Length: 220
Image 1 (cartoon, rainbow, N blue to C red):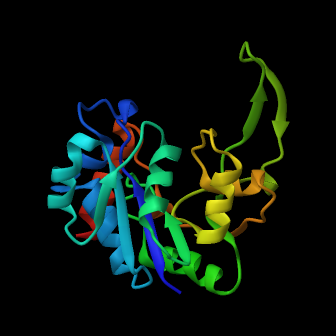
Image 2: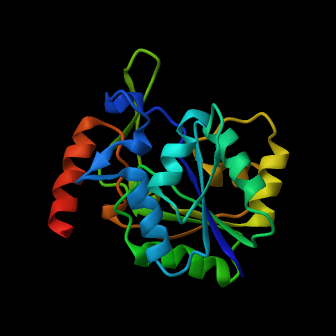
């Protein structure tokens, strides 16, 4: 079964505090986008990668990731994933991966694809939640302490049969979502989990980038 990975890379990454799209920020001399795409191919389980970027970054992205197919993304993440799905053709299995997770280990990607090949329609890699979680009201006052035993933090790549992901997007034509598996859940689908990895951290803030710099240096 053909596996196509979609990499939304049209976001501006304003919380990172840099004046360029986050996917084009460099980490140890290489952009987050390059690292994410190379990691997908290096996993050995991905046949093709489709990258969705702002229209004015098409040429720059194609230069950075010549092995990937680069298409124009949308204003919202869901718009970009729709564009990626349109470019994925008749792929049977689809991964959706954040460019902002440039250190994702190959074995974790392999676990997601293995679960799909074993019959799952939707798969997410997860980590247990380590912190105590509080639910608060609009004023910030604590309403309850949430039992974290059943909570998990979700990472990417998230994996789907192409049919399941297309059906989820068709069922929510105007929806905005940061989590594609959430759309599958909303459409009534079952999402299974596989173990994630701390190295698949998402770079969102300047602090995250500093941590990733240290980790990337250690990997070298």
